[in-house]
Amino acid sequence: MPKFRKKPVEVEAMQYDGQNEAAIREALGAHLYPIDPEDRADDPRACASLYVAANSVYIGIVPGEWVIRDARGCYPCTPDIFETTYEPVDE
Image (cartoon, rainbow, N blue to C red; front, top):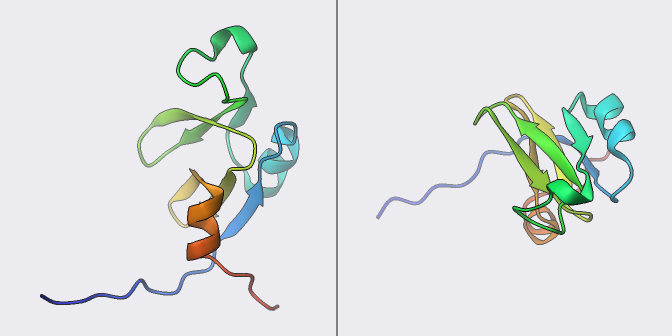
């Protein structure tokens, strides 16, 4: 079976803390908006909704998740996957 390695790619990312939607919108250009508690039927833990252009859909995100921006746009990532996939880049 052929094996493949993920190509190194740099991304920009910010961790969502449940209240920093405006900072993430400003820094990443993400379409991220708070969700009212009565509108959290899909996931009661989700405090914000992130538009993912690749799928043309809004996805609920919970505090602690990362919002990543790459060449395809913005998308959420759970903390455990983020830690195993990404490392800081020295500038």
